Length: 117
Image (cartoon, rainbow, N blue to C red):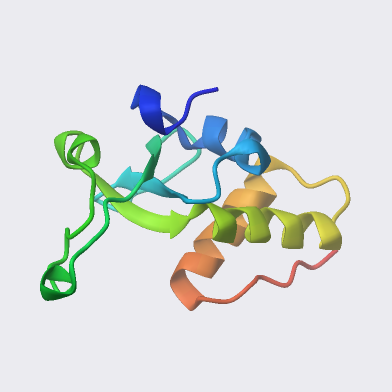
């Protein structure tokens, strides 16, 4: 599998295809410019523990690998798994585009999308 310890950059598509198998303590990291698509570079990494005095710093806990690859912490893997599960409950044959659309909606509104099926 292509997770944390290997510190690999993969596509967001690859991450979504295997989201159910990813470690639940990890986070999805995507490009800091926020111009995301299924081919965006992505990493699945555990964030570093943040001491209370550093919690207000924007990049506190962000792994060096993410910083070196200009990636920002986006969502916990568990939330991404919930987004995917929610889409599949609404649409049994959900496409990656459906899941990506649901991810974008969740990121913008902090809520699950309601698909018109």
